[in-house]
Image 1 (tube, rainbow, N blue to C red):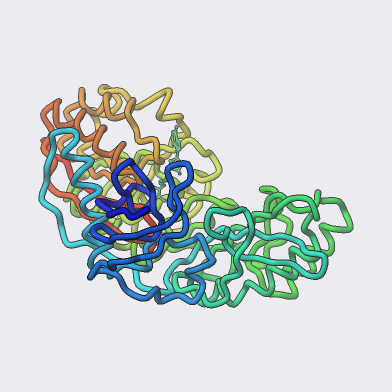
Image 2: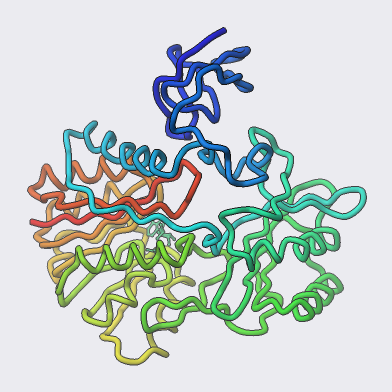
Amino acid sequence: MTLTITRLGHHGDGIAEGPVFVPRTLPGEVVEGEIAQGRLAAPRILTPSPERVAAPCPHYKACGGCALQHAREGFVTGWKESVIRQALAAQGLDAPFHAPHISGLHTRRRATFSGRRLKKGALVGFHARASDTVASVPDCLILRPELTAALPLLEDLVTMAGSRKGEMALSLTLSDVGLDLSVTCGKPLDGPLQATLGQWAGANGLARLAWDGEVIAQAAPPLQTFGRAKVAPPPGAFLQATADAQEALQSAVAKAVGDAPRVADLFAGCGTFALPLAEGAEVHAVESVAEMLAALDHGWRHATGLKRVTHETRDLFRNPLLPEDLARFDAVVIDPPRAGAEAQVRALADSAVPRIAAVSCNPVTFARDAKILCDAGYRLDWVQMVDQFRFSPHVELAAAFAR
Ligand SMILES: C[S@@+](CC[C@H](N)C(=O)[O-])C[C@H]1O[C@@H](n2cnc3c(N)ncnc32)[C@H](O)[C@@H]1O
């Protein structure tokens, strides 16, 4: 069967008429191969796109971590921006785009690896393409070298404490003081295992080791720097994927907020935006995970030169800040999970808050929420694509609204 790829889908797969999904192909390419259940899994490329390049990573063929290494960088950037534009257009919206920010190679500071115990030793890496097997990634192009250098260490850990039945999830983050490792789905923790793991973490210089959410060894608080503050997030907590993208998002948020003296940071996490903003504004941080806010508060109390930062544990899906709660703020930052923030945005639409800085990892829910704001009289001033998930189909963005 011969097909022509017409567009890319949201997972980065090529799509031909049908629709037939053809992984790792590009628009305009003519391909052939066997189709099963709407998918041509192993295409032969008869006519390659001028945008096609040789994948730079040696693991690309086996590893499922990346989906777009076979395309020129400029093509991927344009495609990610077009995903945002199309989501906005579907809601009847448009906006000027600021120049994109693209994270460099070897900048990813946080990754969750899969670990499997084998008859002899262990395998740690990312899931292979369309498979539950694990591909080892010693020369991964996106990870910080400190993370790839730790892979043999993680294999030791899985050999020692992995169960033969399941797969371990190893969430590894580079902190200011060393590696912060949070493990789930390993052997159940008993006294002897805890002692062994504590010794192992100490001998290998880990800043912290957590097992199923419980900290079992900590040589030093695994600090992250947010402006003038240093914060030790709870194990496995959300953190922007690369430090340079975090900086780009912080500066986009600062631009959108301007000189607002009182700011609400909604879905605040551990203070990625709240703490840098507190250099010039009083900030109220709202988030559903109390431990993240405790870390933010601790960081604020130990920093110098920051204005007041208050915090509130609150489920903003069920219990959004209401227009009367919002009346005391001159700007709002909103950075929800993939589902977006429909309930909170409806309350914002009824408020008089003059400026909103939005950060989103899902263009579709962002555009849905943007439509609610624009229908209520807000103007979408600009959008910026921030590519901190290089070679993956994930799209991150910052945007500014004003009324
Ligand atoms: C994309 S993260 C952003 C965190 C932070 N702004 C940052 O950049 O580090 C989304 C945050 O929303 C929080 N969250 C998820 N659901 C929530 C809810 N229903 N109400 C309040 N916060 C929620 C998560 O715990 C997470 O910290």
